[in-house]
Structures are given as structure tokens and as C-alpha cells.
Image (cartoon, rainbow, N blue to C red; front, side, top):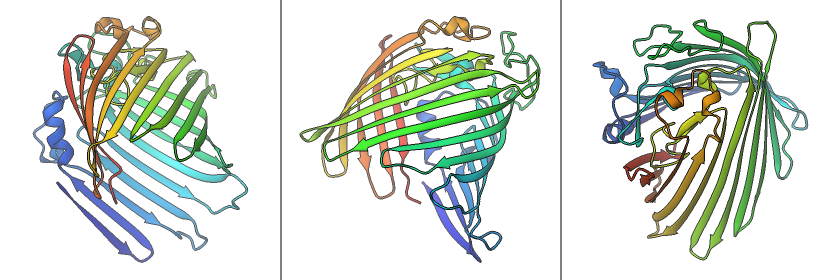
Length: 360
């Protein structure tokens, strides 16, 4: 349930989307993260402003604001035209606010859900993205950004420690600052019967000032899809690790939709390293409806104790887990809807709702 509106003001285009659907779904599957009586808490929406020719030289300006149940994101992107054979530049400024559930969330109901741990992440970044010209199968993006991360309580005040009294930042202050050089490469190959995709991300913290974070973080995702008659088999393997300076919020969180289903977000564990494997088979039930069966598993590779403050051990997270179940995929002109019913290793059942590929 929602409303969409597009407005043209000169050459600029404004898209407004207000949606109540996610609020209904979330009330059925998520524990309350915080108590709020504000009517605005019921609204999920987005505002997007696009200008295709800002200064008369085909410069593009995109401004977007997205509001969720408990999170928000503001993004400003400015692009100047360049020849196609050179890297495309994009100046980006972004601010996001979201509950830090993956690491500091408290597992409930036999790890099937995660409640608020009283820690919220406010992140501001500004920098430059360089998109390299893509080949037939490879694409690459390089970015350098300044980031300032501040931790907040549920009532919006700055904090330096979690509910157990352990530091929530690497510096021990109310915020962490860093300059991050990021390289992301992707390989993709597809035909009528299968596809392969591999993505690698490498982040390097640059010590511009002595108090700024110095680290190296990498993450990879490898996936393979094969058509088996009318059915389709999809497998994926995700892994990563971080060395050097580290704040708890930088840990890899394992568990939840998109990770190990049957568990709440981050309820399996959070560590300096992770490995997650997913296998899913989908099969048609009708023209617009598909069924699925899946098996997920993940582990922190014993690295949970290496995260500052060891939040996973304090919350009793197992460090590894397996989830399996079945679901439905509904395709419509409005978007793709997903419902999954999963069981974890503690035989606790969880129902997930998802909405993707919404038409604009």
C-alpha cells in the first residue's frame, strides 16, 4: 500500500514514493527495536531529484532520500561527462543512520530474531568514485572517501560504550574517522542455461592522521546458477576478513535474510572473518509463482573472539549455524515478492518477507 508521483520541474525530475507495506510485514516478523509514538514512524518512503544538465554541459545531479522503519539514507551524486574510453568520475556525499543489529543486536527466540542492543550507526562520507570502462565480462570501480562514523543510543545521543560497558568505537571516542581506498571488481558470464558471477571488494584504511583507522578488509562473493529442466539451481559462497585497526561495527555479521536464514540478523555470529554458503532450487508453480527449497550455512571461522569486546560471546552467539526451509517467489508488474519459511539448528522457525525490483 503506497503512492508514487513523478513531477517535472523544467529539466529536473522529482520522484516521490511513500509506502506502508513494509510496516505491515515488519510488524509480523520483527521485534520492536525501539518505542516511538511518532506517526512518521509508520511511513516508509523515498524522494529522488534528478537534473540531467545542471550547468549546461550535461552534468548530472542526483539527490535521493530513503526512509525506512528505523533507518534513513541521504545521497548526493554529481557526475561530469567524460569520453567513454576513460574512467567516469562521480562526486558522492552520503549520510546514513541505521540500527547496528548485526553485531550489537541481542538474539531472542532461540536466535531466530535479533532485538535492539541500544547501538545505532551514523555514517557520513564524502569522496570520489571512478568507474573504469567495462570489458565484455569484467567491470571495475575505484573510490576514495573520507568517512566519519558516530555511534548513537536509541534516543539519539552519542555513546562510546555499549550496554555492557565495552567500547563501540576503535578510537574510544564518540566517533571514528578514516580515509578509505576501495577497489571493487566484478566478473559476469551468462548464457541460456547458466551464469557465473564473481565479485571482489578490497578496502584499505589510509593513515592520513595518526588517530585515523588503518586496516585492510576484503570480501568476495562467488555465485553459479544452472538450469535443470524447468528448475533452476543457484549456489553462492561469500567470505571475507579484516586485519589491522577494527571497531566492533566493522565485523562481519552472519545470520538473517541474505545470509543464513532461520536466524535473526547477525544471530549466528560476528567475527573478523566469515564464510557463508547458500544453495537454493526454484521451480515454477504457475506463470507468476515459483516455489523454492534452500539450505544455508555460515561460520565466523573462530574469529568472533578477535572482535574488540567480543560481543558475539557476550550475547551467546554460536559462531556457526545451519538453516533450511522453503518459500514462494511471486512476480508481478509492481515488483517481486518473496516469502521464506526457515528452520535453524535450534529447530526455531522464522518467516521472512521480501520485496525487490519495485517498478518506478
